[in-house]
Image 1 (spheres, rainbow, N blue to C red):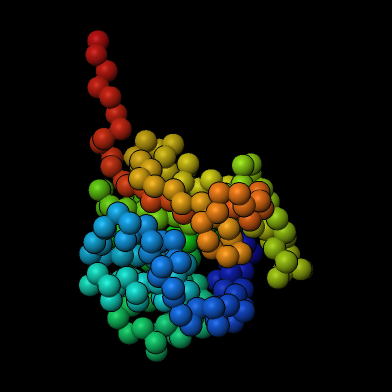
Image 2 (cartoon, rainbow, N blue to C red):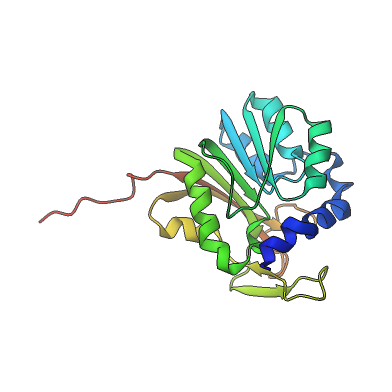
Amino acid sequence: MSQDDLFGTFEGNNWFQRNRRVLEHLDSDADLPCRLIEMYALRPKKVLEVGAANGYRLATIGDRYGATTVAVEPSSQAIGDGRSRFPGVRFIRGLAHQVPLAESFDMVIVNFVFHWIDRCNLLTTVAEIDRLLCDGGFLIIGDFLPSNFVRTRYQHIVDADVYTYKQDYASIFQASGLYRVVSLLTGDHSSKALNSEVGEQERIGTWLLRKASGEHYIEAVR
């Protein structure tokens, strides 16, 4: 069973129960994805969040901008809670490397999901997110941002080899030549506050990328 399957079968529910109280209220002024949307005066029309928990962030985005919002989430308990609390959000149960949707979106949010993805599914997940984001759309990625590639054993599962993987995930999209960085906010994982002096293990980054397939290539002159 892959690491992703563990989250799909039981650990997604366990994570939701551990963090349920934190998800009761979203402080949009402190939430870095919401801050980036507001800072750049983006007005998304159709937003997908992969790993959306109970949809608390999407509910705020939908109310604020009138956007259609879709949540992909492995936890059945998070989805049940979200459907009762946020009826304006459409919920789909699924994993990041197998999103059961054929439509496209002008904004995709993947906030603190990549570090849990099984390495055998990492590039498939990247391809899925790219498939779902329309050209000219915006991608928001939030995750840990160490200087190097860091692997840490996942403390909540002790009887299997499960890790969190910390690295610069935006660089994978940039390397494709299809995305450009609009902005990067860095901060402290514990407080979620912007912080220029945070330690290596607690540094986080939240990127705003724009997908622009044809803008990065320079025409060669023969």
